[in-house]
Length: 253
Length: 297
Image 1 (cartoon, rainbow over the protein chains, first blue to last red):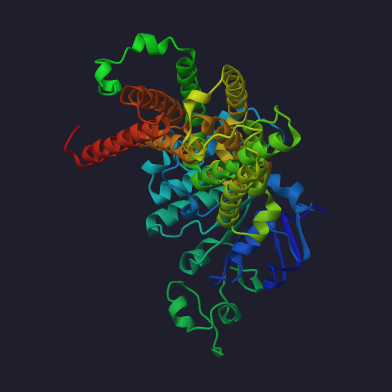
Image 2 (image 1 turned 45 degrees about the vertical axis):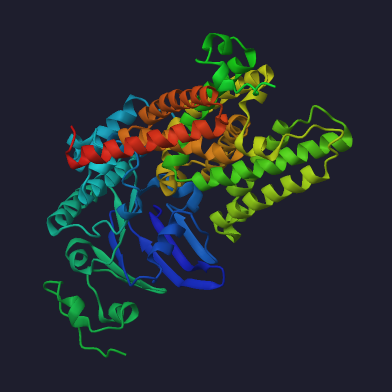
């Protein structure tokens, strides 16, 4: 049987004495497009850090294609939040994307012709070829987001992790990013973490809600259970942006 | 009874051909040139990675090393353990502590730096106080803190030249990986770079630079040479390699100019170099601002 891209079992994690995640089990399947939603402080970022091996779980396990995180990392392309970057950093878009092709272990990787080929391909996929020579300071939010996406793609990952890929982008740009992602999804399993409930449910295959614990739904549906777990607040407000969905009757407590 | 001769009355013009033939002065120029090259390269990382405070902490920790060396010299009578070696031990030690993940898990990194900074200084004062001044000739605090280019020996220059070659080789060899770590540590980790090792390496390079540069402009003013040329250069370029080049050129020209002014007006060279850099830094800021507002093209 082929191994799942990501398999998380009974995960418990946190910082010092504080437990942030408890009993989290979930899978990312082949060609999956899973969105994890949840409130701030619900553990979304912690979960990403665990998958990327930046922090270690207290209990439970994470397997990437059946391997431990350290060995599985080379399958992953990670698109961080664009807000984490110093936009005055002196680097061109091309050099940012080139970073993605460094996946050989070793003291000093060589960037050969095939690396530059991959960079060109990745930039075409997200249509930023014309930005190659621009520096970060010249980019709009959407352009930077696509440059980071291209960087992840240049490493030819089997799994793509995205942290708030559409935060503070205008609606057109959001659609543009999701169009790119849908194309990529033919070969790559995608996991995104987002607040953006409105856009997400119409674009992804499955949704999970994370707030210390996790509820995974096999359809792109935000269920009343998720709302209860995640938000404890009037669902109408949140459901407003979700077309063609009906939420069942439920209590707010 | 005549009036005592005042230097500027006896000399209408500084006799530069005479001054430049003195080997101490020549050494001073070479040392300044080499310090500029070192600071242009390492300073670019310091400025872009925003670790000016790290370089400040390391630079000040060297004071402890200088004092320690004097103390060891006076007690054990080992003349080879000179202040430069003591400074190197303390600076690299501080760099390793700041880069240590065990320390970083327990302390915020700027707290670590603050502790090393003051403890280093205090140790320096203590050791110099304990040193038997009749056995070892101790440099004045002012000379240690604000530099004395006249004390640079030919041997110092040779060691410094070797260090420049080594540092250039390391930076050239690891250029891309250093770029990745400086830009995005999370991505660096995923692509298999040992981020802790790279950061520590960078801190050690900063430490080595601090030790050599402090010999010239002194501990307090190391930060000036590490920061100002690179910050100046980064105002005018968005390309890391160009910033390095521009930082080297501006550091060289401005620090040599500072040195010339120091000799001409008989002011302390360290302060003169830093103030020259500072004045040009502000002028550049002004020009840049006017340019951005469209007053000049």
